Length: 455
Ligand SMILES: [Zn+2]
Image 1 (tube, rainbow, N blue to C red):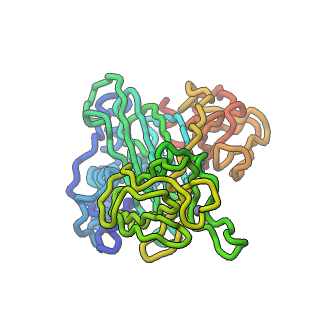
Image 2 (cartoon, protein in one colour; image 1 turned 180 degrees about the horizontal axis):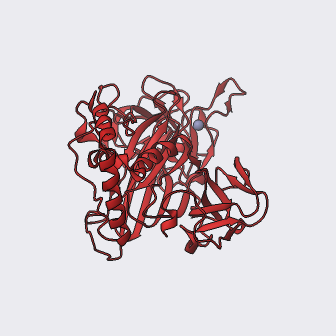
Image 3 (cartoon, rainbow, N blue to C red; image 1 turned 135 degrees about the vertical axis):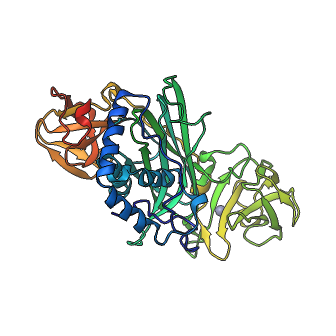
């Protein structure tokens, strides 16, 4: 037995804080809004009683080394702790919930952004889903989970996959709930409504993130998850777009004698150049290459933004500006004298070198694929329609193959993204298969795990 909510949290590791395993609110384990819930609640109680000795040991081992931190626990951590306190941790369902929370981080699926998936969670099963996503420095990741119908709290957490094998995941952020009223607190209420959970994280160093979704126990419902990115910085030229950027970071300059340490944003002479952040103008001293320039300091992120080749200034040294304020006007001063007017825009880390500004201002141009796979089949069982049906790590052609399924291999349909289903196999392996390769199962239950047969 171990504390499964042991993942280190950003900022708490160095402070030596550990998760506290007691004194938390109880989860709604009665399942009072459904018949199945009562049954499970009773079973849970009996099981919990039977293994109370084990539970005491688990709580003791958890509490040892606990110190502070309760106020900063995530909703998922609080729920996990409440499971321990209530004894549900000692039931198959409770243990599965804690194990799933851990295991989906270690073997996540892969998604490319923007991503959209429709999914279903069902009572009687303790599931979670983890998605791995690579994000360049300069982008804000937003994960929005919408739950419709019955109240169902979904824990949405973002982690960074770290190179450190001991602390392989660094906690980043949890979703806040946007809808009014607390989910899962209305008991028998069956009023259709939408619960929205939004997790946001600013990626300042290139990172591989893992997004985890996990519903509370004893609830079922449909949800839709959308994961998108947006640039952290406001675009530096008024009215500009991605297409205004015509020269990129790292390309040769002066016949290879130096490298381009920024991006060039082309616009008509006199177009306003604007502050991409709130900050302070550190310098407007001209230089040979840049001509008339503005150095803007972003204290919140420790970044210097460099605006060059200005036609003229609109700010002075020391001036405090807000996002969108005009700093100056597009021109071709400095070594741009022989080129059309453009803004050279650079980003330098405080105490570090130049970084590629492009992801910091590039706007997402594509929409997440529409879900075309039949969502009526979510939560149901299916089977491989032919031989050699491929289960892949991502919902795209060319992704890693996880498994090749013999004909009629049972699968459980967990989610739908584009023309793909996210499925789970009887042994717990999860991946994506093309929806057209999944035939309906004639048997009521093909899933060997507990709970599936209750439906
Ligand atoms: Zn340039």
